[in-house]
Structures are given as C-alpha cells and as structure tokens.
Image (cartoon, rainbow, N blue to C red; front, side, top):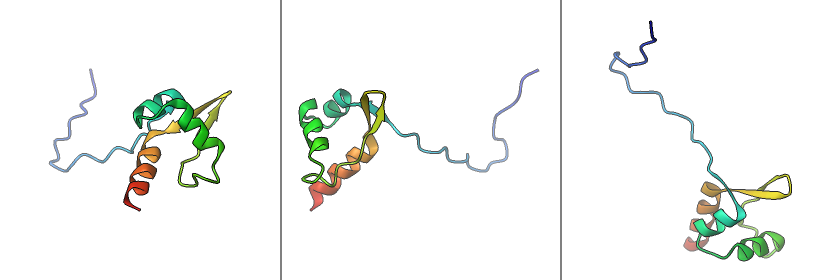
Length: 79
C-alpha cells in the first residue's frame, strides 16, 4: 500500500523553497566567465569590490552562492 501524493483538490501546488546553488571558486569563476584567480583577487581586496557576496568557508576552501554572485554582477552592470 503506497501513499498517493497526487494533488486532486485542484489547488495549485505549494511553492518549494529556493535551494541555493553553491560552487567552488573554480566553478564559480567559470560560471561568471572569469579566471579563478580574478575571483580570488576580488575576494582578497574586498575594499575595492564591496558588492561581491561573501563566500562561505568549508574547511580550507570557499563556496560561492551562485545566485548571490549573479545578482551582484547584474547590479554592477546596471550602475
């Protein structure tokens, strides 16, 4: 006997929460089409790049929120 997960009530499905997309520095740099060292430099010189989202440290590595990075770059492009 299984559980019927179909929504027969005719009401719309509840929206699912947005899942953040995390990436390594190398993958995040590829995502925004810059060399990984450029992203590292931007992160080291945050006083020059205050718009850059802060990455999360996982062990000795950084993980970048790709959605926040996209939003920050889009905002930079509209200035």
